[in-house]
Image 1: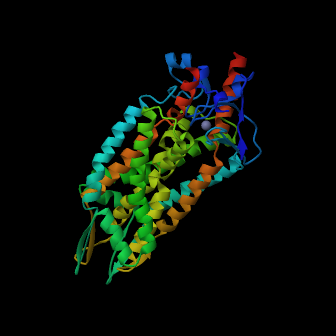
Image 2: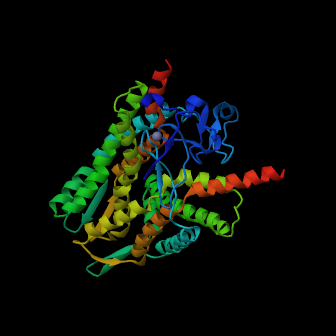
Image 3: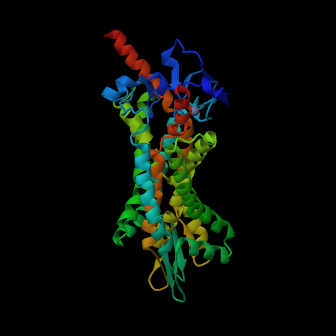
Length: 220
Length: 211
Ligand SMILES: [Zn+2]
């Protein structure tokens, strides 16, 4: 952990200045060793980090996440068997069930947080990462990064995964449980999304854009 | 020592909360967009306190039906029960699922209550320009942001159970109206936390020095 370099006198390098997003303290950006984190010296907020993962890692995690997301939505999560009567559910089936039973708000809430936002997140990551892998900054990158930033709190796959586990425990005394393929896929998806989040560093992309536009200005 | 801290706002600089770029705030006030990412710039989040209160008060109102109304109805050949959030936790505990009962208790009862109390405390202290335990209040804000999403747990459990336990007369589970109110409380408190600007906690320090 590295403490941000706080400047008492006004600095000469305005471009390397940043403000803490939690307490607005003005400080100078310092270079970090791989995997290091810069923290605000006043409030302790994590300012930025240097991610140990390479673009290849992030891309691999994102591709795996995309594959798992498709499987998780295509197969049943779990089924039950009570005296020979069976029933199983897909995630979409569960969302549709709520909708058909006059629980529209709930249905939308579950559908958005477990299907739409995670799908959008992964799609946008791939749209960004694939061209970046070829050293091309794709069109609309600022828009994509901005959207990723604002939808992030609403993707809740990991909470949903815990919900599946709690449901399994609640059911296990009353019914025989038939685990579905999606059960494992959601587990994998949770891991892959965490891996993408920890290896993807939007700051690197912003810096890339910064230099790109700087170069354009030089050419003009 | 704290008297030597310089904030961006004092220097007329405004940082973009999406990409982190610092811009001159007098320019930002006119055009209002970050030159790098195009996000709307604010010295402090717009009407932060008012918006937080609006979401928080709505959350308080819905918190009552969320806890009093049925969240899940379970029916089988032999028994029929209606559970509120609390009775569901108690039932889990009594039937031998202490671990799960503890998880659900934390996610569905402790976390929402914690969020309501902390957000109220933060808003009141910011409005009074309090200098009391500034670091600790910043830390509380971080915890609220971190744990808020986990309250969705019960909503997902009800969704999964309602969809899977549908075996005609043998066993059925239905989501109750409490689930809608509870989901709304989770969403409203998340919005409230998102609109809160933690820099407001620190601002009284700077103002005191200039006067
Ligand atoms: Zn800080």
